Amino acid sequence: MASRVKAKTWMRGRVKGVVSGDTLVIMRITSTPFEIAPEKTITLSSLMAPRLARQDRPDEPFAWQSREFLRDLCIGKEVVFQVDYVSKGREFGTVCLDGQFVAYLVVAEGWAKVWEVREQERYKGEFSPHLNVLLQYQEQAKRKCVGRWNKAPGASRHAVRNLPPSAIGDPKNLDTKALLVKYKGKSLEAFVEYVRDGSTIRVYLLPGYQFVQVFVAGIQAPSMGKRIVEPEKASSEENKKTSNGSAQKIPVSSASVTRSAPDPFGKESKHFTEIHILHRYVSIVLEGFDEYSNLIGSVYYEEGEQPKDLAEQLLKNGLAKFVKWSASMLPDDDKKMLKSLELEAKRSRLRMWTSYIHPPSNFIAIQDQNFTGKIWEKEVSNGRAIKKREKEEIQVVVTEVLSGGKFYVQATGTQEVASIQQELASLKLQEAHVIDGSFNPKKGDLVLARFSRDNSWYRAMIVNSPGGAIGSSEDKFEVFYIDYGNQEMVEYSQLRPLDSSISSSPGLAQLCSLAYVTVPRVEEDYGKEAALSLKYWGRSSKP
Image (cartoon, rainbow, N blue to C red; front, side, top):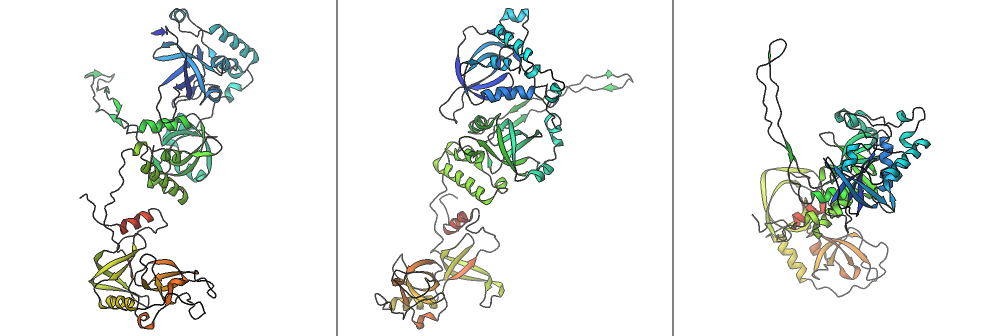
């Protein structure tokens, strides 16, 4: 049953998608790309464009070209439209772009034909208010043999895409691994046909039109809800006889499929992706595939002067989270960039991170705290490792943390520690050393150095020196404090010769590594986080 729209209202909107050569998705114009705006699917009144392929049938001739004309004309652009009538739940209307009726342009180029209005349709008002003008444009297009009216030999045959089985058959026929081997790391042109959620899209890979699902590498958008299949109820027609007299049971399925509610900001994430890439051409770099043979790739789209990375944009705007398993397929710099964008969105509490709570900060620092350690393996001076059969426990204080797995300790309560500390405290040092060449520290020399944080003197080894003669009291030396394990840059004026009486004792700082674990280095992924976790290891207020 159709109904003529009684009060026609012209509305303003932006074209979000182009479903076919005669149908557009138009959304209300909003001030930000994060607001989900009401939208309408409008079919141009009295027009019928060729139908695009589905899994059970190929394209009709000129279907792709018809959709491309309307898409190129309208996608992303502001239009004015009105609904002319509604039939079988579909809205048919008139759309204007820059003061021109879009239907006129489509028909004049031969990309859609005008419906022949039957008497019942005319009675119900199921036709365009501009029907007569549309018919005139159609006659002109036929005379010119343009678009779908092209009469050249083979024109219709060549206007049908040669689609692979992944597009019109069983998508499982696609050899994902072979596709990845052929194109891994290469930039492929693709057309986005469908957006499942903010980070999952279905695309045609060009020029072969392989229809594939791609997960955006390194991120995961909030879910749009999971499919819920109600338990199937089956009934049968008992005692229905076949020709050979046997009983045949015919099950009648009454299973229903629904979806659970989307995750918070799932709709916003999907909407963001749709308004930027739906029914648009993008570049995809295939990075790998998951255990179900779904392709993983980086997606880039044109906007402004430079292409934009979809993963970066979603993370930056708090519409996706960083996921390590697919990020591991990316180059190191790209991984670090994605992780940093997520952290920034968390700090700013953007959208899906609105309720994000920073990790508790009331940790007890491991550095400068006393612990009992068990030595499992000890490194001796000749470099040979000696394994201890019995556990050796020593009381230590952690003096410096180098990474999540390496740190310096100093044994506590020993006579050696107390003796060196007493000797250093008793030293009487001159205020400044005259630059006369008598004290010229070189790499490897043991000296006294004044630590910048407490202005006290400690034993240190020169790690790097300016080289050559000392030219100024401000010349910088890199020193390693042998009793604590830390390093810093010190000016020449803050160095003194070390008396032999206290230089002969070995350094008190002992380098240790955590047993039975492999921890990333500081420069690797999560290396800094691991180091901070060790440095501030302790007990939080939560159990």
